[in-house]
Length: 248
Image (cartoon, rainbow, N blue to C red):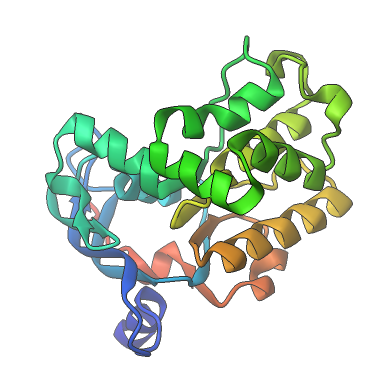
């Protein structure tokens, strides 16, 4: 069991740095005695793609929130691209997240009154690094956002529509484009294909992996849909990396 956990927790040694590294991380929800996460070690290599599976309530979304600095561990260290996220003050965590991470949330977290295009451009409005990378890739942040939306099957005639009027599947694709714009070094996706049909799911996965490969971005992809796992360089489960305590 320990050997399986170590194999899942870290990629094979190849000289590459770590995009994500957790050491002895413990996290409990407020009011709960026992931790939902107790992770001795977990890492994601630079440019690596990882499919992470596990049951609902098993801590997958909590793990993403810890890596993103949205939650803080009770103990242990959380590093992203060599930066100790758990040691950054709140404002610097937010700025670092905006520059270095693209997040696809399970609830999308779009701004309902903004149009589709403006939602995708939000990271570039708040991060000069994201804006510069988008301009380098496509000529401008706007052109980068438009390219991603087109690739996700969301045509120009829809770009001005408020996202509150879109279907759930369309909102999910907008959230994906927002995460990808500006080529952040780390992409984390929480059940990003749950509202997509089979054809849209395949197109989305192809685009996501291609964008990450082109930018050299690392990808942590959380999903119940294990049929997608073969597309990733590595596969792990929460049971392999998490060792929570249980009351007797």
